[in-house]
Length: 479
Image 1 (cartoon, rainbow, N blue to C red):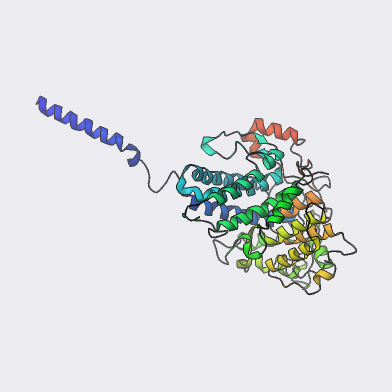
Image 2 (cartoon, rainbow, N blue to C red):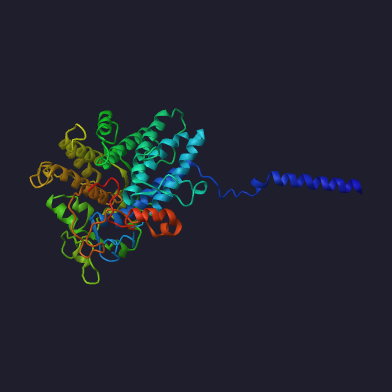
């Protein structure tokens, strides 16, 4: 009996030991993994950011940049930016995707099998961080993307540090290029819906981003030598086949989101009077691409931004809705990260301002040609010799360059508004019923959840922006 009890106890102990050794494996759900392959995350980050910011670009960015006007639910169009309605809250888009991108970066830097992802992850971090700080100014950055391993109440970094610091935008673009050039393994980059794993295309993308963001801070920092070095190297995006974009499909779930929403939401957004005036003056045939004639008149007609819908009666049939590319045939539409036309027009500006030695007019005309090609619109033979001519008597070359960049940036996030804030071009009209004392906002306000979830750090940023004001300029925006 004693032997029987001993043997039974021993078997129980062995069983318990075995259960303890296998505890983690037994209690792990194979259908709910705790880590995700970087290829899946890369695809998710690129698609989610591109899709969401394209939607934001249509329903919010285009209102701030005066490409479109909202008929109803238009507090945002009247510049009550703390009251987002159909759009206007990009903060969580940035932080969700920057967090997921940080996971890719950590995997790439700690596991040699995933080393190929380091360069693209650094470039995407720079790209999204720039979009974030260009909208809001000082934001949580150095402590913000580590998830469960980091602080849940991150401090706000200054925009200057985010741009020029050791882990900042420009440094990460350089580090991303260096990581790609140092990569010698044969493991491919998977999940890359921008370039299909072409690492050299990512280098050209990064160099175009460097041109863009050096120019953006050029009123604060002497960037001439860096820009000239990029021109001399000549390894940036130069053709539309090199663009950092992915195509929407013409069917759900990968069609442009406005094609999936109810018709009432789509019909809320019409051609703005600012956009109409500029395109008509230039005799710009992209008007037919971006918008459609009013159903009642068969003519293109825009509306002033920021109407008071309670006192202004706008008849939808008298106004121009968005073109078919934004709803009926979104397969011709891209989620746009960086393009050849934007790069060429940025270099044209740099040349015109004397920051680089190059032919500003040639770069301008190349940029315009590429922009028409990008928007699949034939360039009229006389377009660049008419009102859109580089040396037009009524506009300075700099205004021509920046107006063309603004036109082509339709639905590209908030870029048209950002460039207007930086340069003052093109001239915007006053909104009809402003809720911001008639002022064009120069930054996005921090969202209310920051005040609730990150109170102490938010208070510091609140004080630095005169009470989270829309009218306090970001660091690079020199008056």
